[in-house]
Image 1: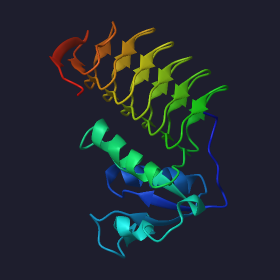
Image 2 (image 1 turned 135 degrees about the vertical axis):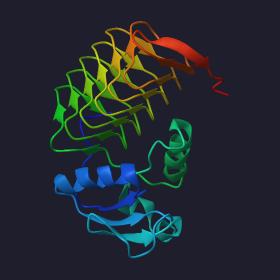
Image 3 (image 1 turned 30 degrees about the vertical axis):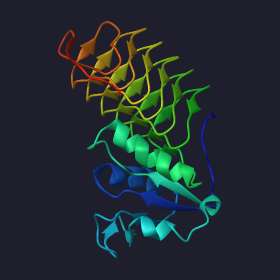
Image 4 (image 1 turned 180 degrees about the horizontal axis):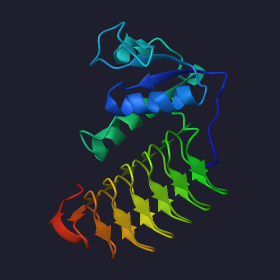
Length: 222
């Protein structure tokens, strides 16, 4: 894991052009990256998103040599983190590599690790020693303080605050403007509701909400 994945010599395709995809696309364009086109069957071929054309569905990538291109992951959270992770894994198994996306208006501290395909959106702040896993999203204006560890395919919604030495395990979701206090762990697949204040660690698969946050549901992860 390293500071940033830069492949300026490879063509970039955006996988997914919906609401989250357009935010990813904007981050790439604001950073001076050129995106060849968008791969998303939900749009008509020739549609344009921020001026970038929709090329079609997954068949667009069928004739492309995976090592010759980079994918930007524009698939959103609407079907959950597990479904999102499954799409990511499917394309990795086909040999494609996902680009880490960093909006130029994000603030990234020293000794920060960014995993493949992670996304750091506008106004986000990552302090020193933070590690972000593969395919994870630190959304608009979210703050992740020192030495916090974010697992793979985690979604941190806009305006969330994670205090120092937190841990958010694989596939968890932290809602908009939620606050996670220092040293707290959010277990794998757990959901923290919007605006919640989490004072103590959250079990894997649990759903918590409120101020202070209390457990509402315990879901099976199998």
